[in-house]
Image (cartoon, rainbow, N blue to C red; front, side, top):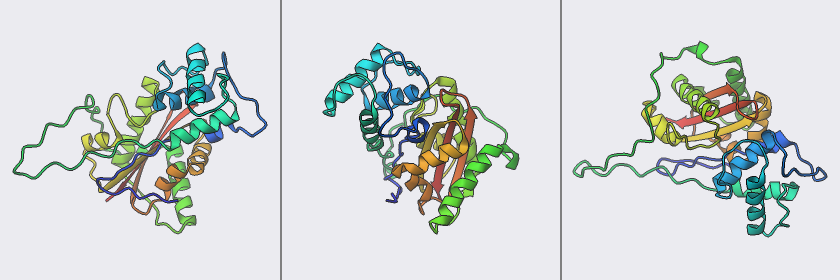
Length: 262
């Protein structure tokens, strides 16, 4: 299924990089209290986004995480064990991937009306020198190649690298590492659309994928396994791409893909 994100109807899709990160099969035992690691980190992030986990995302499966899992299991008619077995994991992933974020705000009213001032999501990104081709790391170039190879296989035109958009994506990945979160909404820059606007990036359509993984190729594979993220990668509505990959975070690397159509 290939989603189309049009002006005024933009949708930020959600990352389910846990699919390959955990490499679960139907026979693998789950994890529970006192477990720790990147799998716990990502599950906490998904539960927090869904409103079940009120605590701090640490990657440690303590009593608060256990209670959040119990509440989720009860809400979805699952056995209430407080541990993340395969069935619970798949339910969390399903609920997370089907959660829709608010649409991009409507355009400003006609010129004869005074528009309300836009809320400021935080301080403007620090100015940096204009990027050049060297701005992209080898990993970021690899990710761009993987994306365009996937598009070629589907008969979709390749995306053009936008260096300003790559600067935005790199700032977003660094922000997630520095502030220890995993979300499309940044406490520093706001939504991806807010961030692009503040950086002076114009577009008619836009979207974002994020991943938390140990390597570029496995992050790409995880995104392609998720229908929503695959839709962004293969969308004919997008013409340009920006990639930001930063070392750090519980999974090893934070990856941000930002897409625009001009």
